[in-house]
Amino acid sequence: MRPSTVNDTFYHQIDGYVKNVLQAISLKTNHRTHAENLAIAQAVRRILARSFKIPITEERALINGKIPKLLRIEKLSDLSDISVFKGGNIVLLVPDEEVHNIRSLFRELNVKNDVFGVREAKGLEFDSVALIGFFAYIEERGSAEQWRNALRWLSSTSSITQTNPTGEKVAGVMLDDCDYTVSHPQIADEAMMVYTALTRSRSQLFIIEPDLTASTKRKLQQAKKYRGVSLADFAFSKLSDLELAKAVSSIDEGQAEMTAAEHKERGIQMVTQALDMINAREPFDIVRKKLLEAQERFTPSTGNDRPLLRQCKRHLEALEMKRDLMRDAKAKFFLRNTGAYRLSGKFAEVLLFAQSLGNFLNKFSGDSFLEAEVKDVKSLVEEIFAGTPYELRFRDIFN
Image (cartoon, helix red, strand yellow):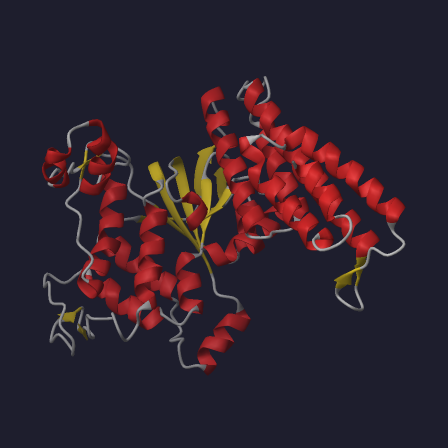
């Protein structure tokens, strides 16, 4: 817990004069993960500290655990091969921009592991986590050379953060400028992304990297940003040399059964994931599939939580009715050639739409979990009927 978190937690329960005391408290024992996972995360934190003046945290782990494992594969589809990857309970974390494509690919491959983007996973923890394609993603963004340099810093004993070459050598290679604040500010976002992903695991941590595609290699070669050895290979070599991780040829964590509590926890995470998909405007069919997956986690044979199952079904029903209302409105009232709504001569259609709207509001208005869905429908109705003779009628329906 950070000092600010301690303060936020306790400040309103006690007299204000101790606020400054609470801000000075720092709990330095990490109860979330073990020493081996913390070590690799702290290595990335040192990169942030050296280049971007981000404070290094003085955490220590309460227990020891298994060293993180590194797996190189030719392509993502290799993860559907159980001789390469077997681990039904491993949660897959991917860069946010890659979430949609990787989810679609894994659905086609029947890879059933849960897939989260880093933003979705922030604040969540899982027993076993695999980071998928983070170094390939960084290389595609053109930051490979800076990351090679930053990874070399991990073998340096200096704390230099000045500009200009440092004069230090690691394995015979001169270290470059340590200060990327102005020259390569994207490294901070990339490193924080990796740090957040690494710290989602309570127990077993894996880093899995596919080869760059041929088209990506050509693009990087044309931009003179590819040296024939991928960033993933360089990073794996460096992490192995530093004994922060261990290279393996396959992953076999078995297909252990989840407890009811684990099913319920995962179901709640899936609902959260579905809501993030809605906010990201992902296709409805994908959101629907995720909510159906969440429902399966609440059934008597899994999480056995009837209230959560009922609420999850209710949320999906609200989404389906909202989708139908929006489709109905577009089909009946929207003119594509003008980009405007036309209500003239549509009295009967308006009455039918009002009836459907009333059914939706009777079911879902007043449900605090569905405020966003009701708000979306209200915005659509205002867009269509504001300033028309029907405005008062629809206002009465909402009231």
